Amino acid sequence: MSINVGIAGLGVVAQGLLDLAKANTVQLDEITGDTVRVSRVASRRLRDEVELGSTAFSTDLNDLISDNDLDLVIELIGGTDAAYDLIKSCLNQGRGVITANKAVLATHGNELLAIARERNVPLAFEAAVAGGIPIIAALKTRFPANNIQWLTGIINGTCNYILTAMSEEGVAFEDALRTAQELGYAEADPTFDVGGMDAAQKLAILVALAFDVPIEIDEVYCEGIEDITIDDIRHADEFGYSIKHLAIGRQDDDVIEMRVHPALVPKENLLAKVNGVENAVQLGTANTGVLRFTGPGAGGHATASSVIADLTNIASGLYRHPGIGGSELNARSIGDVASPFFLSIAATDRPGVIASIGETLARHGISIASMVQKQEEVVRSVDTAVIPVVILTNSVVERELDQSLKELESLADIASPIKKIRVVDFA
Ligand SMILES: NC(=O)c1ccc[n+]([C@@H]2O[C@H](COP(=O)([O-])OP(=O)(O)OC[C@H]3O[C@@H](n4cnc5c(N)ncnc54)[C@H](OP(=O)(O)O)[C@@H]3O)[C@@H](O)[C@H]2O)c1
Image 1 (cartoon, rainbow, N blue to C red):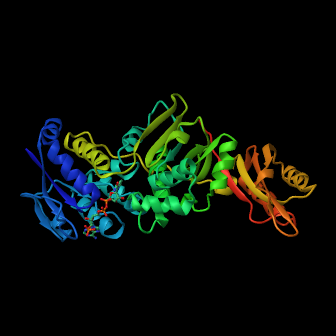
Image 2 (cartoon, rainbow, N blue to C red):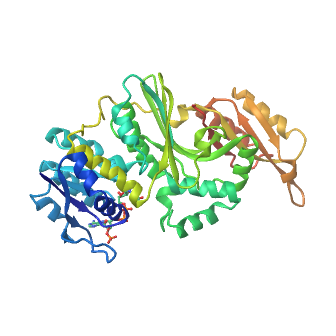
Image 3 (tube, protein in one colour):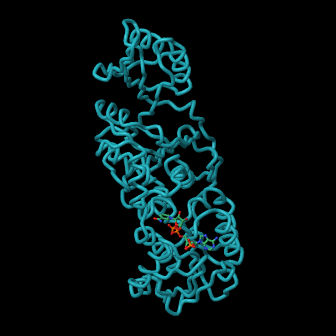
């Protein structure tokens, strides 16, 4: 028998998929027991670099819906609107879909997965999070005897490339971003990546799978890396930490926290050693300890290999619907999350200032694990000298910390705003 596949899009991942499908025809047929054939491609335009042979091509996505010979459609156009219409129409027709599109899943995933389940057709999305790493397959099994308690990940390659370059080469954020753009690791408009939204969408999907809750992108607390400076990275390093952009999901007493933000990670933690555009996800489980997954989070071939994994699963009859939305998502607000903090304070260099910082924090029940005055970094002007003071606190509820910082910032000797970065070390 032959399995006829239609592809939407002819970009990076679609081209990677066409390459891999061609190079692995025999293996694919052997695994599935059928002949897998890309019989139609629809995209905005034909690309000169692509050789489609006998595969039908059109610029109208509707041709993927009306072609009754197609068994499966692989959506690789990205974005939300056209992708949503295409996926929904295919599913409603009883046709299975594979997608690499985290944006459409983060926005419409609950509805689309419900349709797929109702019509009993596959909607597979291994490539949508962490490109070539099989984290969706791992989470779909949900490790029944393991009891996942938390997950942390580096799931945006652009942020990780920039932070690695800042740390290893001592370049400023803007320079690292420019290089990332030149190398094709960042978009011309990088806001979605460096602002954290891309990681937030992926986290919402991972959390839904890990804890059997709906995909709730609006409940993800999201901060980007735009305000991280070379000084922050250097000061964190002196305390024994790297700064990484992390995605964190944690379940505790049926309350779930979902957050993406820069974080200090102890240098001995695996995540501190994940550099450049690599991705990594750690799963904290009750019975198996910490499970670690690392690998390429993007790239045409790496991402297409995940699409092929979905394809072979479906064609071999191994696909099963993900467990998502079995229970309500009761989200913890960021103000209620407790963690240690790194604080960077610009203080007037005069006697008594350090004592008043300590007293103010103590009044709010915040204890200091380490505090260093960066005497060598004093900035002098005609009538003042400002000294950076860097502090590591012990664990504190964020709302309480914010109150103490507001009080500190109102002091004449403290320049506002105080920089705070969360410290994360679940492992
Ligand atoms: N690139 C990666 O490494 C990677 C990794 C993981 C997941 N993904 C996901 O994979 C998907 C595809 O990414 P990509 O990097 O391959 O994107 P891409 O290179 O921009 O390719 C998108 C393709 O779809 C076409 N297209 C876009 N909107 C269309 C529309 N409304 N109608 C018809 N055709 C349309 C584009 O046409 P033009 O040729 O005219 O631009 C292009 O051929 C996205 O959801 C992305 O998030 C990508």
